[in-house]
Image 1 (cartoon, helix red, strand yellow):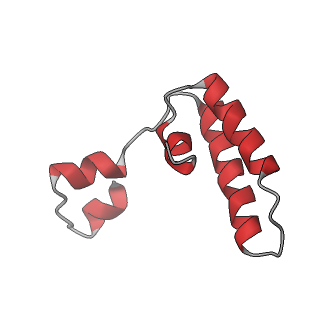
Image 2 (cartoon, helix red, strand yellow):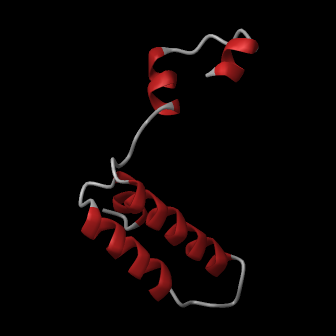
Length: 77
């Protein structure tokens, strides 16, 4: 927010909400989500089709927080 203020940027309420959105209250679930996304990105940049590492991380993230919106989106749900 400090950067936005120094730029004198004016954000709408919706933009502010998206900027500070919390998709999970669990830091561990969020970490697992980011690691799963990293595994997915590795697949896109290689010849591998092995989704298992990413799916395991996403599953673990959902075990911690079944409402983790980022994982639900990644899994197409």
